[in-house]
Image (spheres, rainbow, N blue to C red):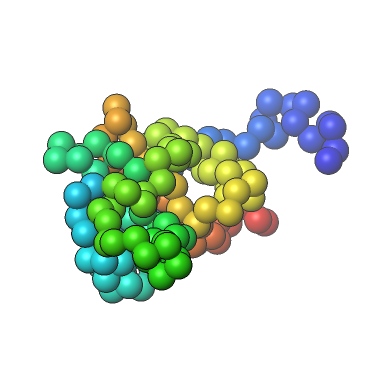
Length: 146
C-alpha cells in the first residue's frame, strides 16, 4: 500500500455508519423455542443463514446459525440426544456491532471472519442484522470502487 496515500487530510475516506443499511425485518427466535421448530423457521427464510435469539424485552442473547442446527442434527443422530431448545444450541460468543460502526470496519470483519452476517445492537437491545450481501450492494450503490 502506498504510504503517501493518506498524508493529505482530504484523501482520508469518509465514514459511513451502517445505521441506514441494517436489515431490521428478519426472523428472530426465543431461547425456549423447540430446536426443530427453529430449524423449520430458518429453512423457510431463503436468505437467512441464522437468526438472533432475543429475550422478551428484545435483548440479544445469542444467534442460532445453520451450523448450530447441524450440530444438533449430529448430536441427535450419533449421540442419541433428545430434542432441545434453541438456548441449548445457539452461539453466545458473538461479534456484535453498533449502528455507528463504519461500513469499512464491517467490510474488514467480513474479510477476516467466515460469518455472513452480524447482529447490530444498541444498549444491549437488538436492532437488526448487517449482511455480507447488503454490503456488496452498498459498495456498488455508492460507487466506492471507482
